[in-house]
Amino acid sequence: MELLDKFPLVLTHDEVHSRLCSGKEDLGGRFTDREFFKRGEALLRPRAAFAYSCVTDHQRETVTLSGIRFNSKVLARNLNRTDRAFPFVITIGGELENDASMARDVVHRVYLETMGNMALGQCLKYLERHIAVRYELGPVSRFSPGQLDWPIEEQRSLFSLLGDVEGKIGVRLDERSMMIPRKSVSGVIFPTTAPFNACRLCPKECEWREAPYDESLRRSYGI
Image (cartoon, rainbow, N blue to C red):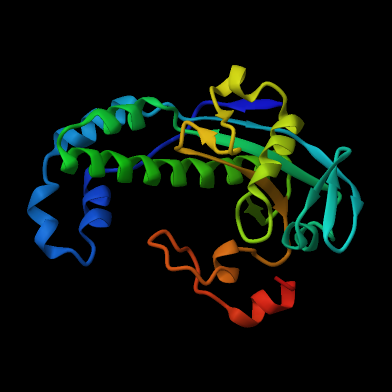
């Protein structure tokens, strides 16, 4: 397991304000307090753990990384042309979400939650670039347990590839295999010749959508 705890965040109050108020003009005057941003910024604790894993077996609906099998047609298809992949867990820590959960002011709480999500997104993109450059991978994509056909319960297997994730970066799994702190992401980063984005296979409405839904592409994956 390798660790990363230096992330060049460039998030600003204006960006958070823009995300919160997009299409919600009546809220514009309620999220102008820059003290929310300063408080949230001081509570961000980004950390990541990742590892180099070999693709040791590949089937149509399963793929094995360093001896551990995962059940997902989507993951198997995306790893069918590579012999390596990089399981990871990344978090911004629990301090910001704890502060948000205790806030009596709903505006304060929503602001910090949104800021935390945006910061985590930036850290995730930085981790992708870091791994791609370090291992000379070229373009990379990622996929996570709980997305599409990859069972959320297999986060336990993914964590086992990394080792003591809780001891190193403070992320653990609850009885439902959900990560604590909530502002965390796990998954596999892999080299690819064609960009993959799980949003293209997901028909659900989501404010964090990164790419338009493509029904024909979903059918091609057999899910």
